[in-house]
Image 1 (tube, rainbow, N blue to C red):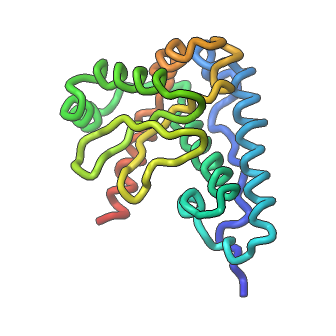
Image 2 (image 1 turned 90 degrees about the vertical axis):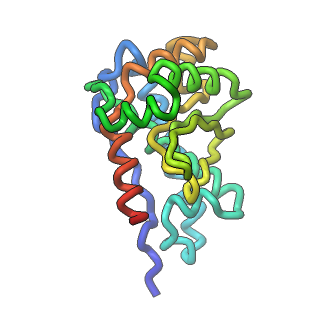
Length: 205
């Protein structure tokens, strides 16, 4: 029987060059983050799954919820990094009218949304991610997860996440996490965020 529907998981290339996010995120940070840290999670996940053929047909999202801690952590590392790198763009565009209305209805304004994101990201002790996600009530929420945990994908639709592990910003900004979060505002890929929203909504229809 062939279980290999998803395994092995691919190491995905960036859709932009390493220097494309300067001055917000340097090419050195992006190189170590994407080419080293993210790739390490892909390699470790595939190594763990190699001896577990019964899990080869399990999608990445489901692996982030599995009981095995090593598999769950590395699957989360792959999922979280792939969403993070897709959530960034050198060609920033303002949120669409549809997205802006959702932001305003949920937070009052885009500024208030970013204030909440930055407060949540700087308030997270240790490593993890801050997320913008659609909640079951139809409003956007800011969430945080520790380490490589993933938000509840059965409950929330992620629009984007921001990696706040130190390797995401330390080469550029040392311990100034708030400066990094402010910088990320200028490279958020709102078109991808809206695609995430639409694709998940289409799947649930």
